[in-house]
Image (cartoon, rainbow, N blue to C red):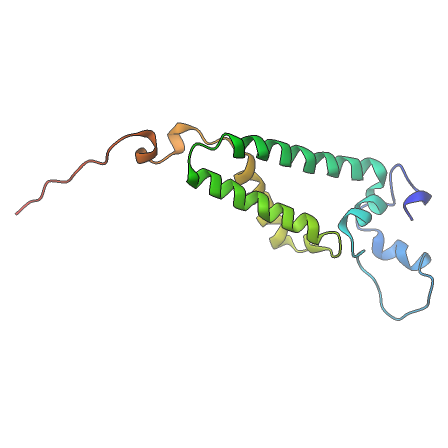
Length: 141
């Protein structure tokens, strides 16, 4: 399927309409998605779209690795490591299924990407992380 339109593909969302023409055995089951997100991306958007998708993933993991190396404290390290781990899990899972057709997973991946790569400045850290001591309240009697 990819080699029939290698550059631009068949268009987003077209897999359900294109696949029956390539099916080798008759069946009553209608396949709405390929059980491989990367293959489906290449079929629908061509090698150009697939390359853009892989470029995004490469940039995401590259920037996230920089942020992990430069984490200021264990809390930041844990948040970023959790976000990157979730992305790795979905990327591996996408080899055998199509999880990103579920909008909630897409939204969660967007938030996780932001947590993995956004630079956290000192103004966003709690006061104790910046070296300030909390003020003690006077007890009233």
